[in-house]
Length: 179
Image (cartoon, rainbow, N blue to C red; front, side, top):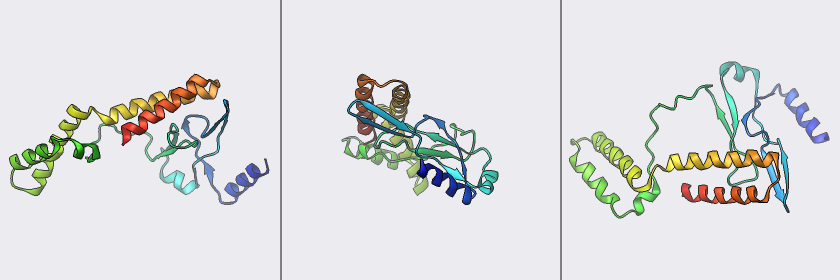
């Protein structure tokens, strides 16, 4: 308990506030021989000036995937506009598909002769190609993360070997989806 007291004393000396968090209650889990130990170890802190500058900011404890710690997501705005245009991201898996080079070549050749228009055409065709060939990877990833978060929430209530196996299977599937 001395460490926790020292930590709180340092936060107080530095005029830092714990921001609290939404999502999972615990940020660290250890499953050792069927016995689950869970703690709230990880936290985000800020000072009063930062809190005044970003009054709607919040922290969300995300589900664990690669570690026994939950990642923390700091959001500056209380309401995220999901309708905002998402940036275009090249998916490495596209380059391994035999049709992708043809998709790029055709998009480039039918666009008007400016670099920006060529890139715009490639972005549109690559996005369509991704949906049709690979499915929506982001949607699948988010669905897996929701399932994983649900399993991890249930694990904090009850110690279950079948839930632990499901958690590992979902983590492996999420890992494969993200490659």
